Length: 119
Image (cartoon, rainbow, N blue to C red; front, side, top):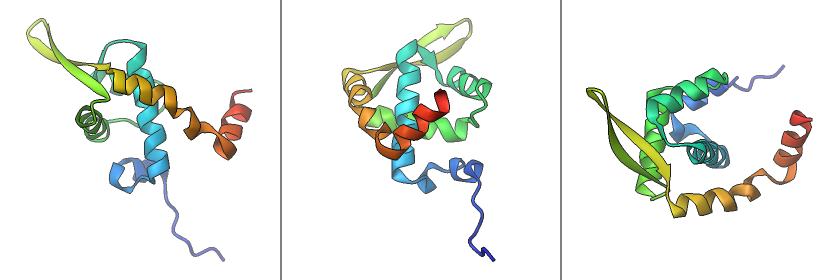
């Protein structure tokens, strides 16, 4: 009889503080990769993730974006869109380097898993 607690990934994602560090690094790298594809604002990122079936919300994404801003991985610029002001995110050179060097997070067993899943 298995008495270990069942942990749902959605429960883990509710608060990044409880996400194992390697998983957090991979999620951060994924968000950096998304930002590298085009200039994007936070709400657009949330909708983009949700459209791919990834549970995303402001309470999950904005703390990550704020951490990336503090680490100078991304920059933020305000752009007026009608009457609204949107915060647009872009990669900094430090963010580009982190993305480039992040490939090692996807090696070993996790890398093999990804290769098999996309075949």
